[in-house]
Length: 86
Picture 1: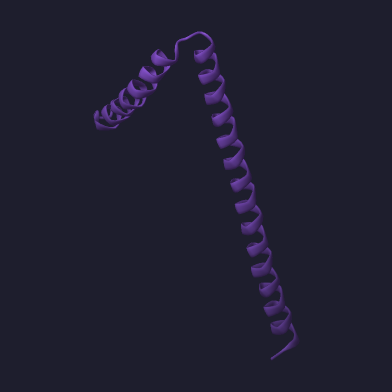
Picture 2: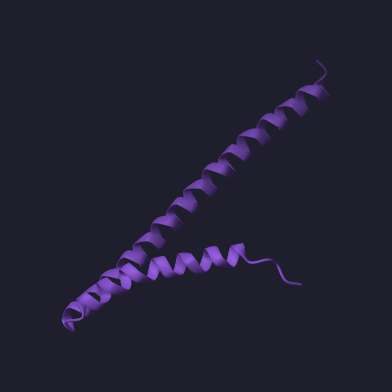
């Protein structure tokens, strides 16, 4: 094998290793961001639960939590089902 072919092969190997490192770093970053987002949601939820308990409105919060996701999902489904306008 000629010297230039060896050099090219070595560069390709380096590129593959670098691509693998990039993918690993991107995966770690996505994982960290997802964990931060989950933590924010938990903290926000616990704040509203605490406030509802303080104001003796925990029952209305429970009702809202039961009703809201269903109505929200229905809106998403109907939005997707509606024909495109344009």
